[in-house]
View 1: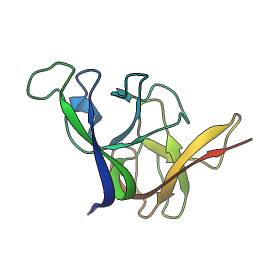
View 2: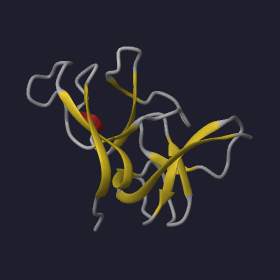
View 3: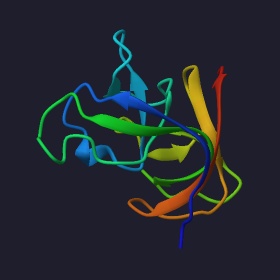
View 4: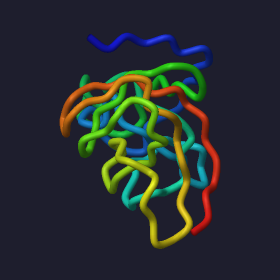
Amino acid sequence: MATVNATVAISLIASADLKANQFRFVNVNSSGETIAITGVGERVVGLQEDKPGEATGLAGETSEVSISGVVKVIAGATVAAGQEVKCDAVGRVIDATSRVVTHFVVGTALTGGAVGELIEVLISKYQQAV
């Protein structure tokens, strides 16, 4: 079973109804609001811990975003413990070892799992070139 040990979390306003984004990585827009990831290997600000938009179905709700520590995140493909991971096009984590363009690593998998499963990831964000 996955556990969470987030060392630092911040509160941000959600730019949209992001209730489906719980346990996925997110970024921020130019207004400082959380937005969903829309491309493989994108830069991230952190991991969305809650379901902003669940109460109203609208933008503007506060979201808790973990920016460091050990978090639980949804796997977008089979991931093995010890692998560096990046985001897929919807903020889940996938193996970061194969790449054809520069992308951003979001951390290291501490536990492994298959697509759709919650795994533990130590957040350590950095750019990785081809």
